[in-house]
Length: 222
Image 1 (cartoon, one colour):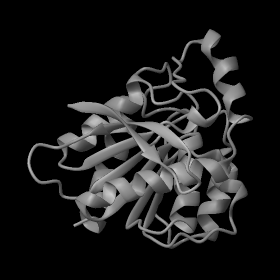
Image 2 (tube, one colour):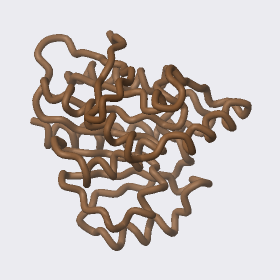
Image 3 (cartoon, rainbow, N blue to C red):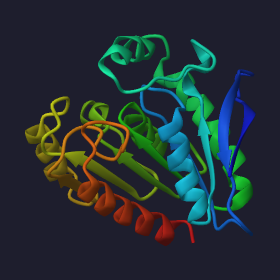
């Protein structure tokens, strides 16, 4: 279903991207923002899922600015290399690449963004700082809690896990209380609960979060 292509950001940088196209006329576009593991098999499967729902999905390779083609798995031996990449790519340049993906996806109509982990934080930032978005969803983006000054410019939904060892759930609840207008859901699950390639995968939570996310996009990208 998918293909690899290249996107050019406003600063002239060219990054790879995975694009999944729906059958027939797309009903909108969705930018899929990676975890710290690159545009790996899981992120591609997420893009494929949204294409199956009728969207033009594009996942920009945000680590190309530091290491073109970077991909990682989820085993303990993969973690140090994946974590090291975060220090090499600042959020500002990453947002430029996300903006290029939004421009590309706009050929399909209204555009939403969904991100996971590091990408969840970037989705929150994109909702507040980038034009062209009609909806945003972030999964377990711990950095969101340090970006409370941002105000999304499009309807935004957030998902967190109550058992997340990386993101204190009490801080998530405080944040939720401070933003009562924001759909924010806490699941009985750990960090990475949406990813079926991880030991922390929780099928029940992932299914419910996906149903809510799909409904969010269906409402605001129509």
